[in-house]
Length: 295
Length: 295
Image (cartoon, rainbow over all chains, first blue to last red; front, side, top):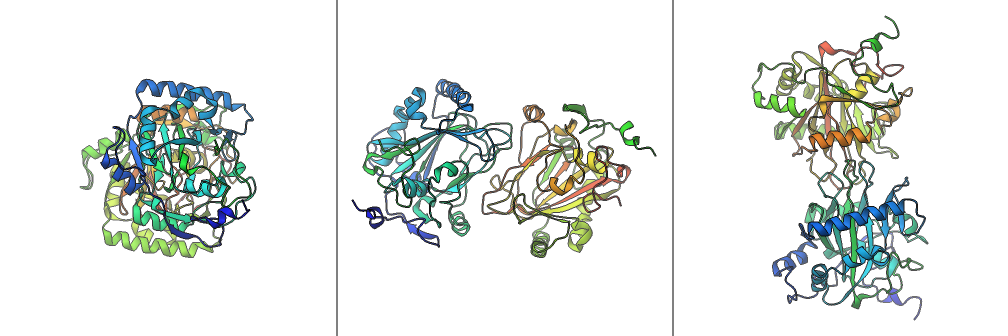
């Protein structure tokens, strides 16, 4: 294996040039069109292919939501005083922003990642077996929750974690009501079909700051404007128990939350077992296991 | 006139104690119930009295909007290099956040403040003649527009400008489309009936920082939570040319704007001529004329 192996096979080069570039997606969006489950039908598969996301209102039962919420509160309490690297603080503050690797460290969230109806949809879309690439709770507290600027997750996973192709997706499960007011996720429908390469080089140990506030792997304003002109903007919101599922390359972001209502969600990223991580494509060394599993 | 005159007659004390306090509004909301115009009817007056705001879709004609937008762009251009105190920058940046006193310094916006249908509604609600207490353009640029945290305008106007009673209102005219995505104004319906006194003392020349980011006159989180529990939250949005009119004591705020779409609005505050400014109620000296007219 030479140092340049991944550069040679890199179909999505990023952070390697001074100019942003648009690259057509070279991978499928839906990997298996033959229905293997009864949670989503062909219309929903077509919607996902076209728009890059699917939204499910009340995907989880009220009793499931209650159990997850109570565990989330416990994790938040226990994380407040913690110095574990898995616990990320708000930029410019000490409030807990995220806790990573909850599928690994917590029994309740491990079970959630194996939830049969959830797994059925994910395996349908990604065509076969999957594993958890990353999981986290995002707390976005009331009054002070900060924004997440626009980004494609895949851009970072490719550059910093060595994820070779677009065969992964994120699941965001609302554990508080998500409203148009409390900093809910916005997505740019259709943006998953374009890879926007970003400018700049990845600094060493970039993740230590980027999880608080990202400064590399940030798409340029012209590209964002053009993507929004083409696909518009939407904000799929629902009550606690709803679920948003979105392609790894979908452009998304969220504004600040000044309302009294926290917007806590569990994120779980599934990657195809056919798409295991290699060496990073644009970073000196891979990020730690709790951010990007090499399992 | 003694130094304590305004303290003796102060029905809305604020920034004078270490604890926030709730004070029932001692003033009417609608000052004249007898219809004197045909722009709003009795139902709208009742809605305003109950909720503290009124929203008008397409209040201005497309040609009026076009003229205002082109003037707004001119003012923005001309303000970029300006060092006039009327031009306020974004916190932590050099982008123009607001330009004050546009009704005084600009012919187009002066005419806007005298717009007959607008004046008719304002005079109806405030019961007789009014003057412009403050005007400004808020630019809230795309991608980087920062939030405005929750506040009652009256709290500041009372504390720092010496506005004695609640007999004023704000008009916010959308000159770009306001959407649920680009940091539009949120209001707490019904909150105008409670005066939430704030803790802390006003520092000297507070306005020089507070117009970028407010740190005094900020309501406490418990009060905000209670107000939202009682009245909920709403975000009256509409296309360019729509108008939001809200009571001086209505709790309002807005999140950041990460979308490509700027959200530029003209604000104009009307005060009753019966309610002219006195000495500040909780500050050493009044703010300058371009922020609070003593005309």
